[in-house]
Image: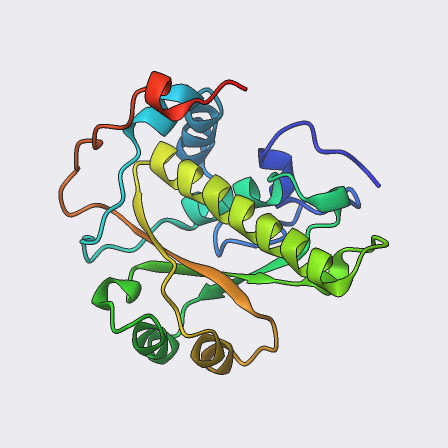
Amino acid sequence: MSYPKDILSRMYSREGHTELLYPKEEDSSIEEQRQYEEVVQTNLFNVMLNRRSQRKFENKSIEDSKIELILAAADTAPTAGGFQGFEIFHVKDSQIKVKLVEAANKQPYVHAPLVLVFCMNPGRVKMNFSPDILKKFSLQDATLAAAYSQLAAHALGLSSIWIGVIDEDKVMKALGTSLVPATILCLGYPYKMLQPKPKRSLIELIHTV
């Protein structure tokens, strides 16, 4: 097993090949490489402080290069035992998006330019614990992966909305999988850039014991 030095190498196979694991139709241009370098140098704290959920997106496609970085970010998320007990469904089919809208309490913004469904896969977590604990681990894995993707998207100039109210059975049927969904992440270019909402003070939030 090899250990990638940076997030960009996560997009490539571990066998020394040059093909992308999630390939684009065209080769990377100099401009795309420049965008990659800018993202790598992005101030993480600024990203976290300024991120804001967005429910209205422009009718604009997201560049493949940005989608690859968002997925690569998910691959870097910490997981139980390093087993990555989750799977990501990249939903491109418009009819499946319509079904996901229905499965998500008819929230129309689920039909977004980019829709990622993070599902639990406890079968990947090879640890000596009860099935309930393994399921909990996989839920945590999927949640962290989605959060990493959300932060990466904001760093790339995109916005997102986290969908937590879902009919699991309907989502599973729409995707054609037996894996239980943890969340749906909807992303796109914001119709209007929103200012971050005020948060609780740390004095109120933190409890020292």
